[in-house]
Image (tube, rainbow, N blue to C red; front, side, top):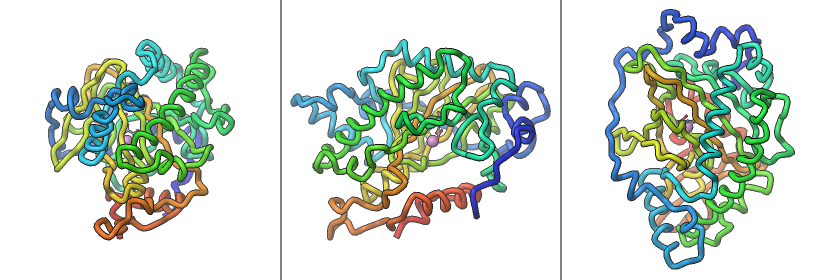
Length: 355
Ligand code: OGA
Ligand code: NI
């Protein structure tokens, strides 16, 4: 299968979840998981202890870093995700970023459509329902933006309103890029590898792509998902969740867990490319988003991938007699092709890439 064909603005407008929600139309069947889905459990202690990492300690050269590195290793090996605090980005800034994102989605449709990208499915304002094949459709609209490197941003898709938007995104992108580098180094250290083991396979212009996901309040949350279970096609993803409304959940050993909102924290999950690079030692987290009937939710996911020219495969340092190579080597174009194919079938991309 080739990548889905781009939509015209009129076609797009008719697919936007926000429009469907606003018009109070009958919900089209293609959204409905008629048999529901399994409930998630609360596990607050988990997120206060094993899956909460102090970034300033993790990236320091103090003796306390060892404990944080061990926590990082076990979180990524068992769960593929964790939350970070003390990462150096002010809580008030993050809160305002979510606010500004919500203000964008509150603009009139015509204004938002100025940011849609007919010819590029990874840019701009729109909706991903076109890739779903015969699968159920997710209850969200999105704004995709290249965040980093700054010279590769496509500013024609950046909103002019609210006025603060571009400046805040630029500031956040630069902070994220620094955090990405520090996180890759910590991940390598946690595996007793040289600090640049991941970084040397990314490239100086490794892209970070931002996805504002907007989940309007939903008339039947028991049978509609904001995002179906999936893993990300990234090395890792930094998620800034809504500071008021939860909805993100992760799966481990067939059980779903709610991810609590911790004010000021970022949620980091490992993705498929990361799982391949670590030869399966770190897991690409399966996660989903549920909806609610009371409040609109907004999040900003930042997807970190290597530059397109890099081949992706298990790091040679992590392939040994005890740990034989578990995944093929491939390039990003092959990955994307398999991703769209498996997405439309509702299967997992990683299953195709496993040896
Ligand atoms: C994603 C994603 C989670 C969220 O965009 O891939 O999983 O909370 N987002 O919006
Ligand atoms: Ni995701």
